[in-house]
Length: 114
Image (cartoon, rainbow, N blue to C red):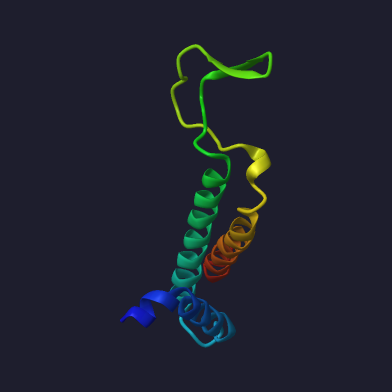
Protein backbone atom coordinates (compact mmCIF):
# COMPACT_ATOMS: atom_id res chain seq x y z
CA UNK A 1 0.00 0.00 0.00
CA UNK A 2 2.88 2.35 0.70
CA UNK A 3 4.15 1.89 -2.86
CA UNK A 4 0.79 3.01 -4.29
CA UNK A 5 0.71 5.96 -1.90
CA UNK A 6 4.15 7.01 -3.09
CA UNK A 7 3.64 6.65 -6.86
CA UNK A 8 -0.06 7.44 -7.37
CA UNK A 9 0.71 10.54 -9.45
CA UNK A 10 2.71 8.49 -11.94
CA UNK A 11 -0.07 5.94 -12.17
CA UNK A 12 -2.59 8.73 -12.75
CA UNK A 13 -0.38 10.15 -15.51
CA UNK A 14 -0.14 6.72 -17.17
CA UNK A 15 -3.94 6.34 -16.98
CA UNK A 16 -4.38 9.83 -18.48
CA UNK A 17 -2.03 9.01 -21.37
CA UNK A 18 -3.83 5.70 -22.00
CA UNK A 19 -7.22 7.43 -21.96
CA UNK A 20 -6.06 10.18 -24.32
CA UNK A 21 -4.50 7.73 -26.78
CA UNK A 22 -7.65 5.57 -26.80
CA UNK A 23 -10.14 8.41 -26.63
CA UNK A 24 -11.72 7.47 -29.97
CA UNK A 25 -12.76 4.04 -28.63
CA UNK A 26 -13.73 5.00 -25.07
CA UNK A 27 -17.08 6.64 -24.22
CA UNK A 28 -16.81 10.42 -24.30
CA UNK A 29 -18.22 10.98 -20.78
CA UNK A 30 -15.43 8.81 -19.34
CA UNK A 31 -12.77 10.68 -21.32
CA UNK A 32 -14.21 14.03 -20.28
CA UNK A 33 -14.39 12.97 -16.63
CA UNK A 34 -10.77 11.79 -16.52
CA UNK A 35 -9.41 14.80 -18.44
CA UNK A 36 -11.47 17.17 -16.29
CA UNK A 37 -10.27 15.53 -13.08
CA UNK A 38 -6.66 15.86 -14.23
CA UNK A 39 -7.28 19.51 -15.10
CA UNK A 40 -8.80 20.27 -11.70
CA UNK A 41 -5.89 18.56 -9.95
CA UNK A 42 -3.29 20.52 -11.94
CA UNK A 43 -5.07 23.84 -11.42
CA UNK A 44 -5.34 23.16 -7.68
CA UNK A 45 -1.65 22.27 -7.41
CA UNK A 46 -0.72 25.36 -9.43
CA UNK A 47 -2.76 27.57 -7.12
CA UNK A 48 -1.09 26.03 -4.07
CA UNK A 49 2.38 26.59 -5.53
CA UNK A 50 1.51 30.17 -6.51
CA UNK A 51 0.18 31.01 -3.05
CA UNK A 52 3.16 29.38 -1.32
CA UNK A 53 5.75 31.16 -3.49
CA UNK A 54 4.79 34.65 -2.39
CA UNK A 55 3.52 33.90 1.07
CA UNK A 56 0.06 34.79 2.26
CA UNK A 57 -1.43 37.68 0.33
CA UNK A 58 -2.02 40.91 2.16
CA UNK A 59 -5.06 43.05 1.61
CA UNK A 60 -4.04 46.09 3.64
CA UNK A 61 -2.39 49.12 2.10
CA UNK A 62 1.40 48.87 2.21
CA UNK A 63 3.77 51.82 2.23
CA UNK A 64 7.52 52.02 2.62
CA UNK A 65 9.38 54.57 4.70
CA UNK A 66 13.16 54.54 5.07
CA UNK A 67 13.33 50.99 3.85
CA UNK A 68 10.76 49.71 6.32
CA UNK A 69 7.53 48.10 5.22
CA UNK A 70 4.52 49.58 6.99
CA UNK A 71 1.00 48.22 6.62
CA UNK A 72 -1.38 51.14 6.86
CA UNK A 73 -5.02 50.86 7.80
CA UNK A 74 -7.21 47.88 8.53
CA UNK A 75 -7.07 44.84 6.27
CA UNK A 76 -9.47 45.06 3.34
CA UNK A 77 -12.24 42.55 3.02
CA UNK A 78 -12.21 39.81 0.42
CA UNK A 79 -9.62 37.50 -1.04
CA UNK A 80 -6.43 38.80 -2.57
CA UNK A 81 -4.56 37.33 -5.49
CA UNK A 82 -1.01 36.20 -4.77
CA UNK A 83 1.86 38.29 -6.07
CA UNK A 84 1.96 38.14 -9.88
CA UNK A 85 5.78 38.04 -9.88
CA UNK A 86 5.75 34.67 -8.11
CA UNK A 87 3.61 32.90 -10.71
CA UNK A 88 6.63 31.41 -12.54
CA UNK A 89 6.89 28.07 -10.69
CA UNK A 90 3.11 27.66 -10.73
CA UNK A 91 2.97 27.91 -14.53
CA UNK A 92 4.33 24.35 -14.72
CA UNK A 93 0.96 23.24 -13.32
CA UNK A 94 -1.36 25.99 -14.53
CA UNK A 95 -0.59 25.84 -18.27
CA UNK A 96 -1.23 22.07 -18.67
CA UNK A 97 -4.27 22.45 -16.39
CA UNK A 98 -5.77 25.16 -18.59
CA UNK A 99 -5.01 23.08 -21.71
CA UNK A 100 -6.78 20.06 -20.20
CA UNK A 101 -9.79 22.21 -19.27
CA UNK A 102 -10.00 23.37 -22.88
CA UNK A 103 -9.71 19.77 -24.11
CA UNK A 104 -12.55 18.66 -21.82
CA UNK A 105 -14.74 21.58 -22.95
CA UNK A 106 -13.93 20.80 -26.60
CA UNK A 107 -14.96 17.16 -26.14
CA UNK A 108 -18.30 18.17 -24.62
CA UNK A 109 -18.97 20.79 -27.30
CA UNK A 110 -18.09 18.31 -30.07
CA UNK A 111 -20.46 15.72 -28.69
CA UNK A 112 -23.33 18.21 -28.46
CA UNK A 113 -22.64 19.46 -31.98
CA UNK A 114 -21.71 23.02 -31.03
